[in-house]
Length: 386
Ligand code: NAD
Ligand code: MG
Image (cartoon, rainbow, N blue to C red):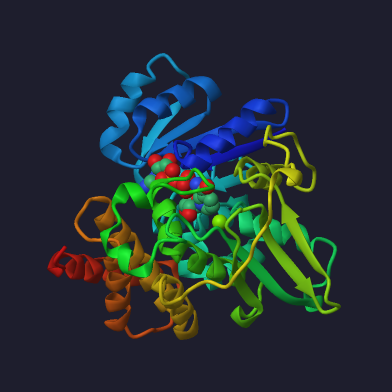
């Protein structure tokens, strides 16, 4: 039996994680879970999974959740302290980090310091503070398992190999809903168009990140830290069918890839049950039903966010954290109709232009850079004519 905490249980990754737990009640028990705003779903989850601790992100919601859970034997907490209590609960062996955005940083850091293994969905953690997190993982001797499908694919493709034999890592990208939209029409796309991802069903923020291709930029950074490799060894291939989830090429010219029906339950289950594999209910892959699997290079002119991510990697230090926070603000502004789709990249670029990269030696400093970027990006969005 593995005791787990789920940070972000009401999200897309959180719900899929609970489906795996439901299918294997003999293997996994939920000790603690946390949620942001969706209290109705959260209360239902608490009833179904009986965690010892349940945490809402806002302290203001504690009283209401207590009311909704009256009669249940659960400690209900709120705020960042609550998130930390969930992440560090005594019995917890593994924390599924599935909060979206830089909000995942503090509880995930607390979990590592408490010696918990991490199943990492929250890529923003590594994007903003990869060097600090990888140092902490080493210092506290915990295991960090990727949940992101591409990184899970790489993880599965490097098992049993020497890292010195890796020639390159090839991350695949679906290309998102606008892969075939002419560049001059991107100005007019709507929130609905952008949320209409062809292959994956995910939370809103990452779905917009996929439409701008910032998601792939964040994933290059994530891979750079997870697999301790230079970015020149990480290549992005557009693969619209999302069947090959990523690949690793070795010095002998051999390429090992991981394939499967696109469904996050597969990489989540692997992170939870590693090194074993468990049934997931994911639709088996029948390659004979595909007329072809295609691959090509991304168009950086049409998708400037990917180029911005490469620039943030080159600048290093605080720049990825600044890029990430500006992206969060810009995506939120787009989702709320305050800026247009192409203005997401513009907001990020202008925020990065206003920043000079500097060293970040603690999570507090990362949060400071993040705050600065949020304020700057908000101001830029306010001035934008949409
Ligand atoms: P989501 O929006 O569906 O869920 C996010 C969860 O975090 C929810 O439970 C929400 O209540 C909680 N949350 C949001 N803001 C919070 C805050 N400020 N404080 C505390 N809790 C908060 O997102 P998702 O799609 O499940 O993605 C979660 C993470 O996993 C993201 O970092 C994303 O990039 C990554 N990821 C997701 C997928 C996917 O298929 N959904 C795939 C790969 C990686
Ligand atoms: Mg991914």
